[in-house]
Length: 205
Length: 270
Image (cartoon, rainbow over all chains, first blue to last red; front, side, top):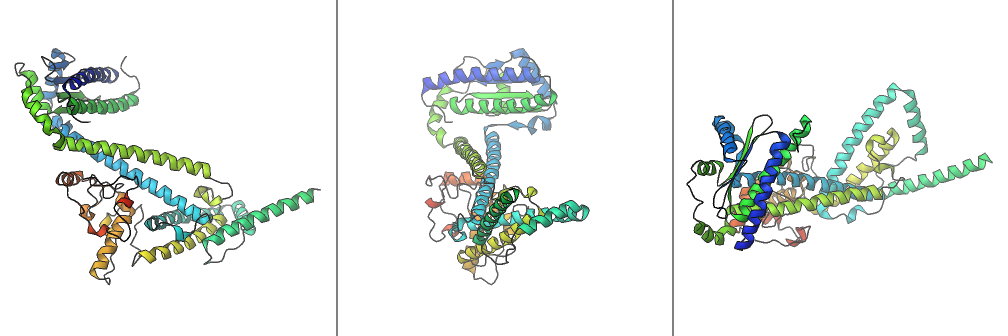
């Protein structure tokens, strides 16, 4: 978006875009059933371009002037304030997205550590703190989940039964074991499951 | 084309199209130097307007038909310096911002797609937490705490005084950055400053819109930390004009060059 230096290119762009704006103004007015007025003043037109018409514009202007000044100026913008507003909104949106992206990336790192795909020592130092934060976030969610589950445990016996059977299947992990032990344990569990299935098949015979 | 029937759709349409119309008006002025005024009434009777140089000036010209467009020769002369006006600089800033926003959106989609595709059923801990039963949740908690300890140990190799309970405020905290950073009063001044700045760089609260200007991350256009935008862009903007560089000596962290911080590879331009 830069001022078009070439005069004839500028003039032709002007004509096209002027047409476009007036079309958009008409669509807005029609689709939403609201008063709209556009005035364009340029060196390329001998007189001012007014939409819908001078008469209709006069109506819009009177309606406009009838409003108290505060109402008129509240949402009034010029190039400077308009661009400021867009920059503000854009910055907020970008910050929000960047934050989300970072969290998602940290989550991937966390999962990769847990599954043994990478070692925590290989985490880029710039990511260590972010990773730690994501782990904290996850722990908070987990705690909440566990609170809900332990509350329900008292309420229904069936979920307690389910919890009991599952815990019987899971080998106990010692405190202080490394994260790689976690995936080793999982592999062990998977092997155990495979064994169990093999045994079940035998039983069926 | 007729007036929309559905009330809420109409509201949404009004909002979007009004926004689009103003954008077109802004562009017409930027590209072609035309003066313009757009007045729009909302379905609720509120008025929105956009104008260059401003709505009132253009309306006055409209009312006094005999006023010609300001001397075109003036315009010609001005066109040479247009590229240096604050408005043009804001436009440039906005263009870059929109590009970065697009890139961030694509990255967001890619990450989510990758997660969807790489999910393996045997890694039960990757399932949503709500689907875990108590035993698994307990298991997971233990493992996460272990991992946290390992990560923290790794971090303490690089960052003195890390971790501290207040060091990294979780993203749910509303505290502005300065309150979230803890400075160990026992460290000497330069260490404190270094840790403080490290905190500035890594604290997730940096992503918040009310990010403090203090840490010099405000020269977006100067390319300090590209994925951090200071909302107080006018300051950033003035720096861009004055070509102020390297306001933040704290970022001279060992081994990380200016270029390495630029995730998308472009070098700082001033």
